[in-house]
Image 1 (cartoon, rainbow, N blue to C red):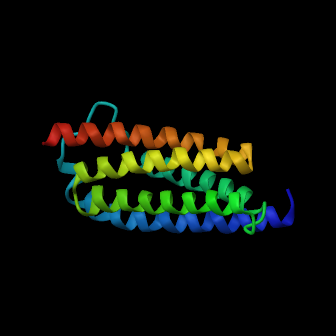
Image 2 (tube, rainbow, N blue to C red):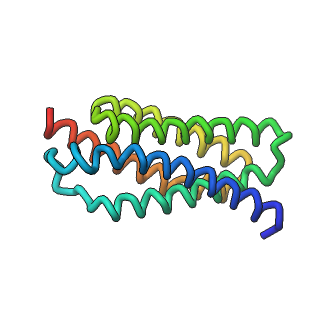
Length: 159
């Protein structure tokens, strides 16, 4: 690993974890009040495990973005890939806000659909720059699909 790759990946991981922290702040509101009282599906997992997996996803996302960024931001494919990455990161934060803080699972579903589509575009653009970076986002896409299923069932059970 080159020094440039290490620095950029570290910086990208920190940025992703900051977004994760903001999501955790939004989550606290719902976790303390609304979330414990709602019906949950049989495949619901403990909040601590859910949070730990999100932290892992943010770390993978950051390393992936760092790999792409290390190829040089001056290149149009790198810029395009990182713009997609940034947009999906913003959507990610909006999901936490809509689902937990605003207690709107239906809005969360729409955001998760948009997020998943944006992740697929991000994987596509990352693959243009680096196969490794693209493959590092695949677990994240899978996790968002699981989150969609969980969100959908929560919405269905509580509507």
